[in-house]
Image 1: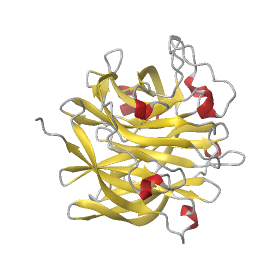
Image 2: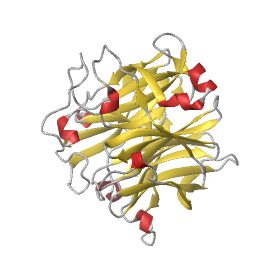
Image 3: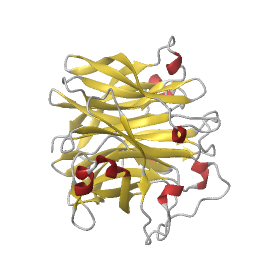
Image 4: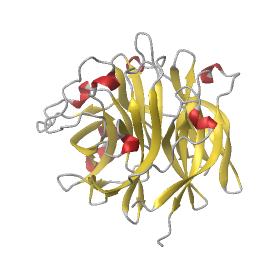
Length: 354
């Protein structure tokens, strides 16, 4: 049993009809704290034509809980060639981890470029000014017999501190979700999946980079190695695919990872104009602190599922998509996309032993 639950609090942000940058929704935010101690969201804002940017919005708090936001503008736009395709483009679904040992906020985001969605990294000291480090590069691992650089990838998030790597050295590690399943890619046939992987449904992977190398040169964080599959779909609410949510947080049981699980069928690939018959829910698992590629515990039931009109009706109906977690006055709040159209918040609570 996972001894945690999510308690829905309500909506904190929706699109401004007078802002052309938000014509097709605000959703799936990252979160962080500026040097002056103010909590901020970094929402994905979508302009007409499905062009995404990353915004910045201060979180407004009343009674100790988030109730709304104050917009501060756009901090990342699809300005680079690898963020723009022939008929599409965007910087999508940011996740932000503050790595105290490096003294920077590390943003992973989806660069929707010429070859579809790929993961890229930017860093910042203040959440407002971001320096791109570029797309990620995955080393070739003979035991898997695939080059992960050739596959679409999403849902990337870093751990907030060095962890043990497969060789015993201290590493920074990133969770991510490569995709080779034909239906999710809009292909007639699946791409070749890694050797020894007998399930081509998208799941959560982990990759590592030497802490020593990154601390010598932050740009080294874009080169990842020693890839491992952490978890594949297992339960009914995640029968189609799973992906990481907010950055993992350290709890007494290990690393708590809130993730999303998808149930249903889709044949649309990445075409946003084709309606998907799916349900997105939030779940959780606990990873081993001595070996975070190993799952210690996993919830068989969702922590949060679409339960009101804001979550059931939108750009993509029936979606709760957790992407950020922050601590406010010793309480932990998870922010999530609602139906790909707006942003909600829920409180993460520990369940007392009976």
